[in-house]
Image (tube, rainbow, N blue to C red; front, side, top):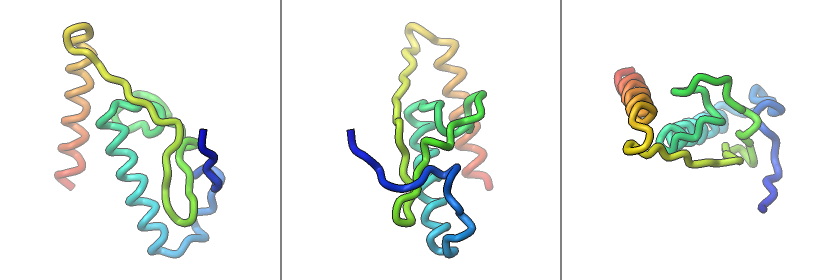
Length: 101
């Protein structure tokens, strides 16, 4: 296991970062959020899932955003068709929201 030296976002003082660093951190977290939606990692961001998320799994190190505790949760449509189509519909809604703004 690799140790990540930095602070989680809950303990970070984001107001102390200059605007260009904040922009990079936001970009990094946006990429992580999109990746989580793609791999159905419901733990971190409450984007398409009904939970509060876990911002303790987001770290800032040297002005960059990083994710820890990553997971992939596949849904077999042959075994769980209702859950699969629910997930697909939520992903489609997410994509429509971010591409229409």
